[in-house]
Amino acid sequence: MKFIVYIFLFLSIFFAFFGNIGILRFPDVYTRLQASSKCAITSLLSLFIALIILKGFSFISVRILVIGIFFLLTGPVASHAIGRSAYEGGILPWRKMRQKKNISRDR
Image 1 (tube, helix red, strand yellow):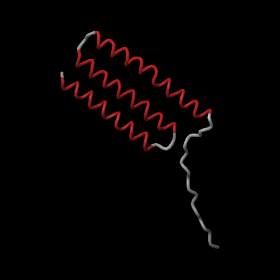
Image 2 (cartoon, one colour; image 1 turned 135 degrees about the vertical axis):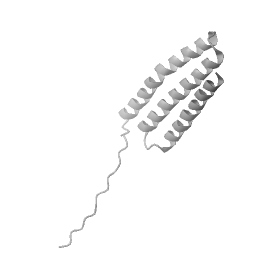
Image 3 (cartoon, one colour; image 1 turned 45 degrees about the vertical axis):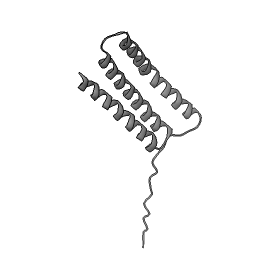
Image 4 (cartoon, one colour; image 1 turned 90 degrees about the vertical axis):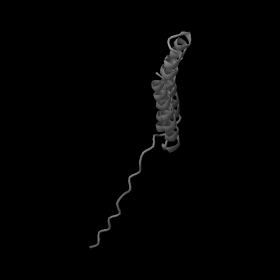
């Protein structure tokens, strides 16, 4: 039983770590927002699942489940609101610049 709890705790740490790396490495607000929102939700949900398994079925686990559902519903909505306000504020998505090949034609 504790082995399953440790697996979910490890998953929580894993998603939180790589979400933070995504925030630091990605080039614009939209990709950073995607990395932070997806990794935060999966990290929290795996942590909450570990806590529910650890506590067993009780009033505390029902509260944790309700909080998890709340985060699952409000996290994407908040990310969408932030992304939409960034787009309406004039922040354009990042695009990779293609280098033009310098072809010299000697005649």
